[in-house]
Length: 226
Image (cartoon, rainbow, N blue to C red; front, top):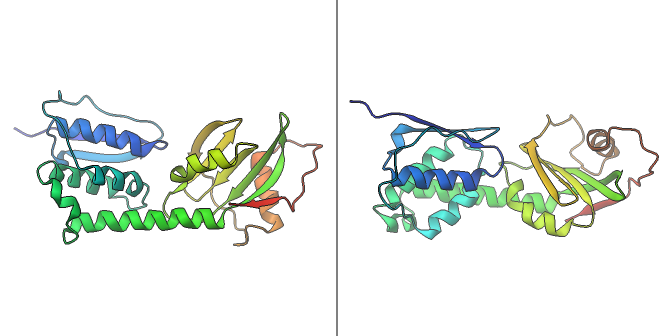
């Protein structure tokens, strides 16, 4: 008798939280890693899973690591994370074993994403591109590897609360309008200067964010850095 395969589609936005919830459910049903296939799509799609039979426990350190590593660009990241979670339920001390290849790879992925997160904070430039409903609108593109934008989202929501904003990276776009956030895949990067202060970036961002003609005059010199 062959065990069933479970094909899991994680949502594009909020991926880390959903992965953790589904992984816990899979572990509690004792579904081994070789019977799970992971992918990311527009919305969450999960087949009917067996009933939970056991408590699923993994070290808190592993949970913290996965919250960052899940934003790595490695397409095999979910296989690695679930395989390691499967092993940790019986060997919780394994998370501290830097000689283990799975643990070492997890630490490498976390470091890669944290470096990308720091680069985002260092290099992001926001241009004022218009006004809507009396609120100024800023927008910017930042070339960063991996996908650290959702990690930075709570910080940006606090810092940029006085205006509306749109931030693009090669992986995703986050738009915040009057505190309401939407997250979608980014458009293809335009063939523009690497210098995000260049006026061509202002023109492109304005066309993306405020395509309708406007009588509002915005100042290209209004660029903020965080």
